[in-house]
Image (cartoon, rainbow, N blue to C red):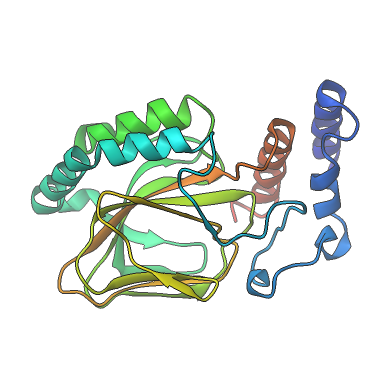
Length: 251
């Protein structure tokens, strides 16, 4: 670890106890510190001790359930605002740039990125922006290392099988506008979105998605802390990944 990381980790251990970062330190050992599920092989970081569960019950975690309920309750307004933006302000959407690729048939409108809310999106998507701020950002449930965005797959679009970078955050999908013929597969299990409802899954497992329908499919994606991570771990992981990105020039 760099001297900056050593200093930050020491301060966290002083505040929360000498064993508070044991799992993070184990993750940093050669080999990642833990056995991986075969379908997590493509992930860069695996924090040991987290349940190796690909699909989660959206209402199964007390910390996340209020976020799920708030977005599902707000779905009708969110769907209308999306339709208005897609019809009249298409310029606010852009090709989505995943860490692995960029796709023209995968469009995005960000509400949160680079550790903060995207102020410009408040005018376009006020309901979603407000729910996100109140229930995920102000409660520190959102993972500041990642993002929240409207994810629109155009007809025929396919997101190829891949693992995301780590298992210590978890992905919430609010199904905003879902045509027939759309599905997502996580760890070999395929599900369909139900409009107005949420799916929750661990995207360190291999996953893929497709829109075989005749119109765009849009979900609101929110990157949340995995509910089994602790506060000191979240602080340490934020410092760690921020430092790694700095050393890699933003990678």
